[in-house]
Image (cartoon, rainbow, N blue to C red):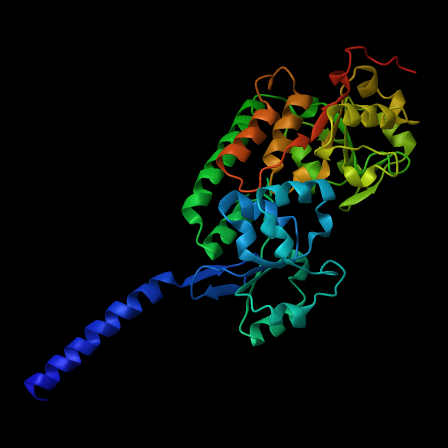
Length: 377
């Protein structure tokens, strides 16, 4: 090799090293919540959401979540919340709408045509190999991720952290992770000195007012687990083996819980149920809570007589469930958590983190009225 040829070779190597180093550094590889390895050449810029409410989680860690999403299923986003999102970013109307992603009919071909670089799949799809295989065959990465914090998990925010890695938002996510963990530790540390056997009994009524009393949740599941973490005893956990089930009137009356919590939203308005949520007035939420707590069985409970009855917006139990935990802790242990304010928690989330802030009546209490307690029947 001549000296000139040697110089040319060294120059070529140097160029190759300089040009390839950034690409290697940019590559992202994570293990999703189904134990699968997901690799991206660079942070995802074109994302498909199989679960529309994941937009709320994405907005916590990304300054422009709408710009990243090319398709989603917004079926679980009510009209009032969608209007709030639209006000924050009108581009949301340009996102392609998918249907049937929760009915086993994931539109794979349509998604492939949109050329995303990442499809975020709810754990519902962990065993749907056909969907994942078709996406991978088209060169599209698919990740099984549940963004909702799982309060009892070793890492409650694992799903959100995975999303942050896949979108290049690790540093931005760190702020919310610290915020969440600080709130959780406050609840955990104060409850450490209480006797679990003496914690208040709580009736959690899912979709309050939709039918007769009472649909509730089982042990270690979703919102019921948030009640347990906040220092209450979910009476449904003792008899419901699955995610949700029905409690008999006799069982509820015998348990006579000290605290009643109903879940609801705009979707219950036509049924005369608990109505609250984005853009809803406090007066409407209070009136609906008063109505659902005067139904047979519920109206005869100790919780109603003592005005320890409350309502929570069901979608708040997703990515923003730290607000729910704060509310539950204050309702279940008012003396212990008198300084915990869910309104301040949500305000701080809107101010510091969320690119899609929301405002409305997301919780309500029976004693938010004129201070008069209903007579026990």
